[in-house]
Amino acid sequence: MKRIPREELIKRIIEYKTFKEAATTLKDKEIDANQIYTRPPYVLEQDEVQAVVKQGDVSIYTMIDALDRVFKRKKWKQPLETRVHRAEIPIEQRMEEVLDILSKAPNGTVFDNLFPYPTRSHIVVTFMAILELMKKGNIICKQEKPFEQILLFPYE
Image (cartoon, rainbow, N blue to C red; front, side, top):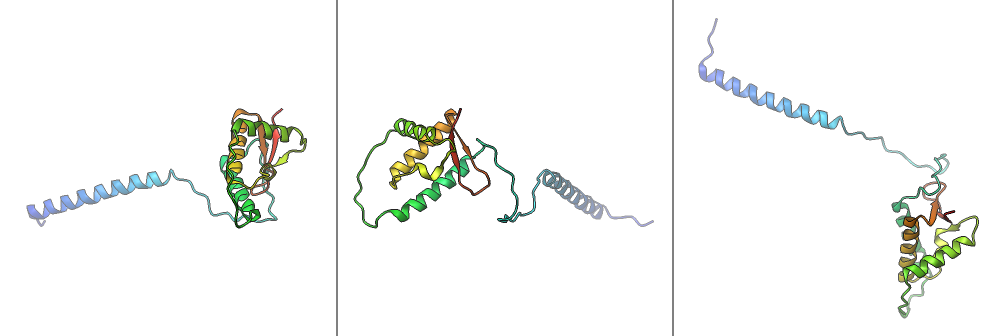
């Protein structure tokens, strides 16, 4: 039987310890990675049947996307040169106006129709009024499918 010199033995023990620590670290990373669940990419198609979003189940992100579309649409309707006339509209007043509009529409009101004036201040105040009414539970929003129009109803 051949004896391994002491220095060689110490070197192998240190090497073994290094590999053992690396294996432990990799095992911990594997355990962490197994806790992450992903799904494969999904392609949305127009003809595909999608689940109906329940009434009152519209997220804030959907509302912000709708506001962005209103800004884009109203931008094209503005004349190129305009004179800015500042008109302050209290949110509370706009909330009452929105509730009045919604109470007159039994089949709901399209989100875009609540923005009759293309001014940025009026659009922002109207949007804030809608969010506040949603927060208070005075109105509910409905969207049949993702990326379709949002309908608003007074909460009864």
